[in-house]
Image (cartoon, rainbow, N blue to C red; front, top):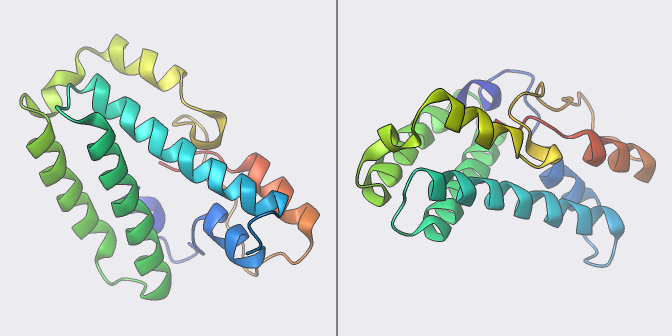
Length: 153
């Protein structure tokens, strides 16, 4: 995550950009952006549960807020250090919520099994989503972007 959002060509999270371009709550692209954000949070909650967090929903939500916030700060203030500070904050949060820390993730097979169940919008094994030099203006472009936005981590 930190490496991706720190890249000079990073233009922001695709679902954030889409939601800003189509702010009407009833617009399908805005609704899909909400779905993608919820999938991200659900995935982070799942990782938190797998890691043995004492409150996986709280940890997942806090990590989502941290990631989305760091992505926005890096977009608005490149090289601000937000990504590396967010990483340290994520480690602090994880240590607070997981009594046995990251070691509780288990063996490599456990991690592989978890990776196989990631929602398509945030698959770990996929390349980062396409980065746009200029925001697309046609709804079809945003819809295609939303459907192909994979690899948020």
